Image (tube, rainbow, N blue to C red; front, side, top):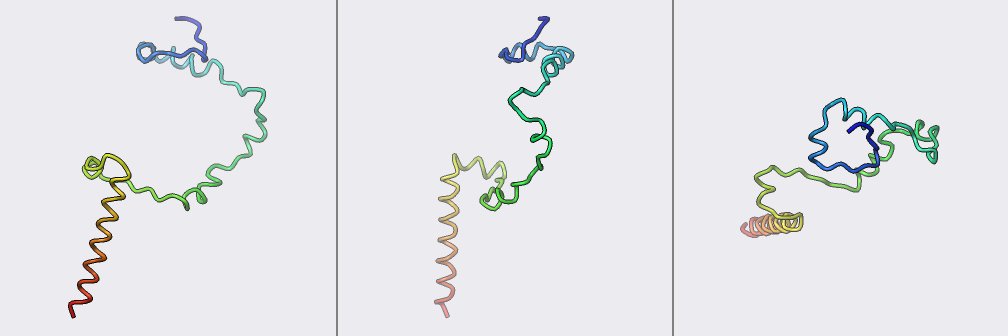
Length: 99
């Protein structure tokens, strides 16, 4: 294992067997930008420029591991939440009609 080519696909076993020096040689040996990319355009980019616009269209909630384990997919989570909302709405309506 002397000369490494970045285009070579390594198996997991091969990656595990590499030492730190060999890994560094692989990752830094061909660290040049391809000619089809304009370096001046890449350097003037603004990190996170569209992050705010993207976040407006998303509503991601992280479930606790024990809660996530109870649901096989997002559809069942949504179904359970819709059921909980329906029960709460019905409970509010019953409370209002008890007077």
